[in-house]
Amino acid sequence: MKALKNDIIKMVGKNPEYLEDVLSHFIKVKLKRDEYLFSEGEVCRYIYFVQCGLIQVLQINKKGDEKTIDLIIKNNWFTDIGSFKNKIPSQLSAKAKNATIVYKINHESFLILMENVPKFAHAYITVIEGKHKESMERIAAFNTLNSHGKIEWLYKFKPDFLLCVPDKLIASYLGISKETYCRQKQNAGIVANCQ
Image 1 (tube, rainbow, N blue to C red):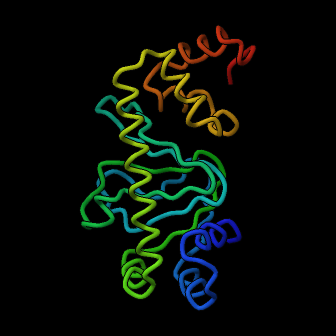
Image 2: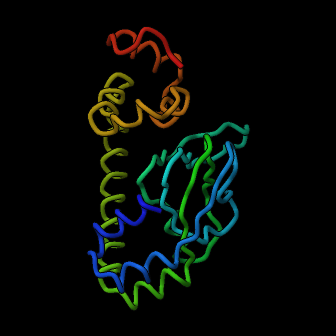
Image 3: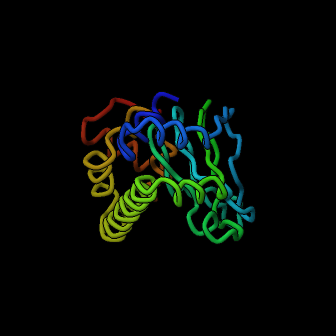
């Protein structure tokens, strides 16, 4: 819970009465590899904070192929905001790609904190705005860049992925084949081989 506590302190300040109240609303969940937090068609009922591990947010096409929409590494927040806020079925799925620990807060507890802890409401808006900005920049970049440009973007804006995300998932996230991703890495002299 230390990582969650530190992140919340950054957002709401060190006021002990608020901090303990905020933390008391979160539930720790341990996930095994390939265990789902929620699946397409289900309502996403929680906001999650990843303490450690890796979460893949994905869609599955009619052929059964997975398309990585996002990758969430440690010390990051995520949810399907439309499903969570409006209590409608999600068009996405989220699953652990290795042993992962998340803290989750449900919709009702979240609303209580939004009402009772003004700094938490401000922090939520900051997180949502940051995620939206990041998504828009990534979509704009990926719509205009070739595979080499996408990989350069990744090294510049998501260097942590290189340390903890398998190449197959990175390639899916970038919208290119694993073979293209590995070849581009090798051509750039980044690694001798691919995972």
